[in-house]
Image (cartoon, rainbow, N blue to C red):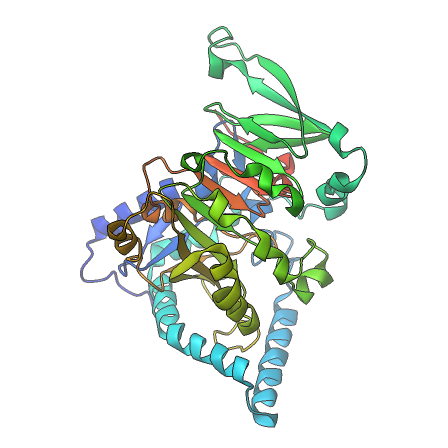
Length: 433
């Protein structure tokens, strides 16, 4: 039986909220601390000539047209039952060690909030109906999985001696600079080194780029710097007032699962101590957002070593709750080693011009905010940059950077050894003008 709209909301308000979601990709629940996000709609606001393909973004947790889902439901149920039995057997056979006890306490502190948000999702009937169709949204032909073998291996390319010789070709639409005649499409081709170089699309429209017979789509007003960790200091500005107000970091933490899936290379956690967060910080300060797993050893490392080394003061924790196409959690909430959520730790890096009053205001971020979405490809995080901007210190528009990026956003600088990964043209469709 359908749940009725909240008494505080009229039918018109429900319709208005859904209409706002269709346009923005963000649906705010009655609880101001929670919202649902459709990454495809959010990302598509970065593009004009192209749009993100829903079927390639949502390559998991949606049934395919031929019912050959990437995750067989029966197999998934068996795996879930095995995990639950394993967790229960562990609790019976041995007491939790101190780290596991701390992880369990953290889980219990946020468990009720997560349940309330999930119940709000299940009660938002119009949103649920839209959610079930996200993968087919406006796409005539459902695309399949993109073969990893057919993609460029940027890590390998950047490690060979020829790396400095590789150039990317940018096809700049001359209409952006008023060079072309009205109504006539024309392009200029600009070449730039693809590694250890800041490559920018400064125009107000997305552009195509070519590299070794592969095509990529660069969002409007964006730039990337592709290098390994040793070259990140090249991004440090000469003057701190040219630094960044928002710094999002998604490190390739040590993770046996990532090794097994061979999706990306990981690094020992201590490597991240060398990230120049203070030097990247704007003189007015920076909001730092760090993605972490639920491993207590990692949380302890971040709180006691990493944040202090970076000069970051923890301010709040956000949670990404993952659901399937029908709104059901991707795993049981209380599975000890397979929680259906990830954490985003927020903190502030103090700028040279920040005073005590500004610091007090910055520490007012509401804790335990929850955002819900259907996951995309493995380790692909939802684009939450826009939701962080309201907490960014300094003048607007904020200067934003993502470290260890695998995807680009309009208005952002993307750094990592494969920031073009999800910019491959096969993840996109041409917009219907």
